[in-house]
Length: 340
Image (cartoon, rainbow, N blue to C red; front, side, top):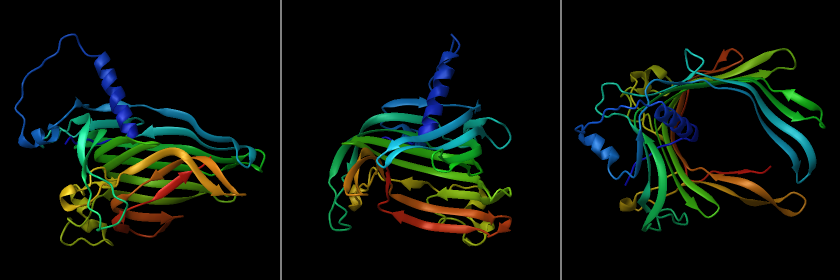
């Protein structure tokens, strides 16, 4: 069974960097055999794709505006839109996004693997928890796996605008500073089904800040800040003195991995009769009783999630509300419908 990890933007950036590196490659190159450690062999066992390594990659990106418009909907015509303007991507110290493999002193190389193949998985059942054992089936899937990733990506949005020129005009909702997103490891699996895709996304993520500056009745902006956010599997294998109310006792204080937060479960556990429960994305239609039962085109997500989230500080309009912890999250279903 191959191992792979992925997030869309990272895959695209990795692929583009790979293409750029290939186009600039010298005519003479070195190749040779190298003895692999056992854990390296475990990672690449069963690969059916390509491996990519990047080192000290910097990408500059600026976007004038990103706008979602609704020119017409089921309730009549409208000209409403949501617009994110003057979007600047950055790292902690530069105006470029930084990507690198963690080449530290570990024995693993940290190469990202892009694979495609057929894997044995525990079949889904109709959610009769603990009463229906899954069967073992084969599922074609693809994915990306990066066991040791080093990334610094932040985004500053200068203006968030929302409204309808026919309904009182457009409102400036303020600004946002998101990041820096420090991604330590990730994997992403996808597989097709009827009207969409199954997927699983696992990652360990640390975020410096999520800050929203909102307009306060024309009197300037006030801010909501969530600082030093840690997203992973669990803090349960942390320090013996772990106290959710005291960030200095958290496992992150040692700089050690907290495992990976999971969205969806493509594989399950056949040996222990745990069915797979993938996240799903479907382009379909949904029925809504607005003025009678009417079907609308829709995008529908189902997002099972599992893991823990902690943040070291919440600050609202200059008032410090301290740390917070949401440990042991396990949601079997979370349906999100998006109807234009």
